[in-house]
Image 1 (spheres, one colour):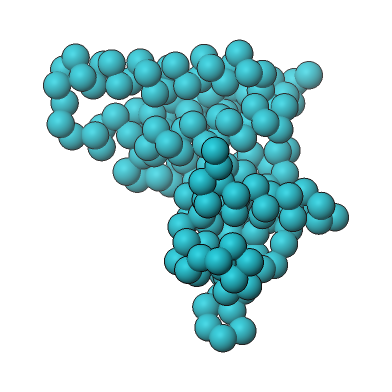
Image 2: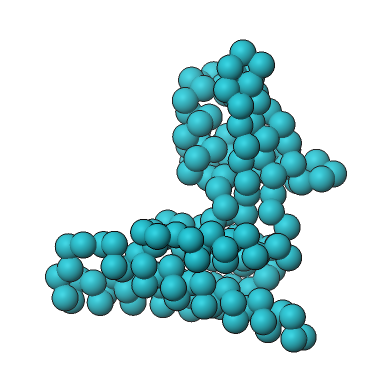
Length: 163
């Protein structure tokens, strides 16, 4: 059974897919009315399901005539993601890794097998290492995860360029 968040995400993705330029402009209030929920619920979906790690850029303007613009990042434009990773001082979390790897697989940039390997390296293995040393500070793990993901993306970009 789908949750309200799943339904809102599916609706917005369908709008984006039907858009000729892979971008839509919406108003939180209108979408909230359509789903009979609070605008904050729309904000939650936008923040958790439409971010750079999932292949989207979200621009918004608040107020009476405010809007939200959601743009799907073309898969051939991974440079902004790699650049973001280089600047991510505190590293990235598991959910962000899973989001970006799922996006790469969904867009056909990597295979499902490669996605499983990437997740195993960056999520499962790091969590096992962290729990075996009983590390309470997750910041070091997030930095390592960022570095691994950045290097994997650089290799994927190089392989794609060389082929």
